[in-house]
Image (cartoon, rainbow, N blue to C red; front, top):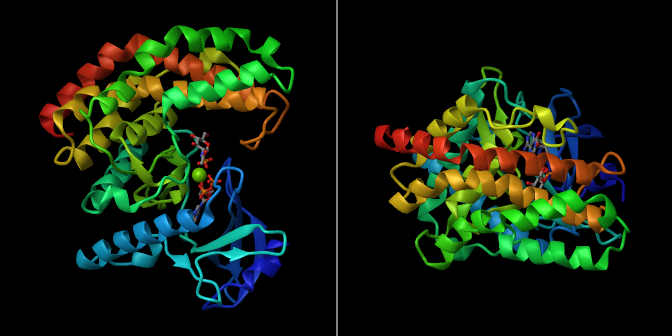
Length: 366
Ligand code: ADP
Ligand code: GN1
Ligand code: MG
């Protein structure tokens, strides 16, 4: 069904006008719903990607729990302008959290955070600091909620062993006849497994706790105001139990890379250590009271694991014939995978320096 017809199904408090595609996410179909009389942005409508999220009931249950908890805390802290700094699920006219259309597609609605912007690429250390502080506060705010209250919306989302099994499966199937173009990338994956499994092993030994993590802390999932202050963390589909490294890792991967996520010119790609420092400082300033020593001492490994794991996922999708991610051209997923592996390699080279940065910040509490 068309997005315009869907809007009518929700219990809106204002009249609405234009409905148009919005944002640069790789997963959901997002639309901006304008206010009918003022023309200001009012709501954000999303068609939920059912290939990625199999159980929408569970997904919306998690999101409702998390958004209500955040808002409750904001009220308790006497925060002002709560609606412009936090997400609220707008119910349907039938008081449900999502609407299922005649094509069996699921839709949800949020309040639109007005006058906000996102950064797909970071060139200013203040933005890296502020984005990290927002993700760190998100972790801290949810730390008094039991992780077991949330369901896994995508099982084994950041489980490297499972991601490698999925890759091996696609290599064996080779259903898009693309393995021949991906030989170098596959060779790199096979040679780097050992160091990339550091965090997984700490988890298996019980040295790091499960927390409620966001799990998709791409920097463009933080909304900023016009003065570059963080407003709100968005994209809550993957909020579920995880290790802190998942949030730190994806944040670093997307804010400290000198190139683009899908940069075809590998020379552009690498970790900018000043940006790494700024992001780490922001993250540690918001979380140092919460995190244990093992978590802090092992944070730097996330900057290798995250580009690696994303590279593995992009490569898997390339071999599967581009079934999961939105792509803009034929080899897009392979280009993304190669770019991420270049970043992971650079992380391997800079690991010791990154560990030292985090050690210093931990001593100074950010
Ligand atoms: P995807 O899962 O496809 O990445 P997101 O939930 O991240 O979808 O939404 C896509 C983009 O829409 C975000 O990167 C952000 O720019 C914007 N966005 C998301 N939620 C809101 C909101 N409530 N208010 C304003 N902009 C938003
Ligand atoms: C997807 O939804 P979006 O575009 O913020 C993906 C992330 C990847 C990212 C890579 C649910 O994020 O896991 O890190 O693309 N989200 C999902 O850019 O798979
Ligand atoms: Mg997003």
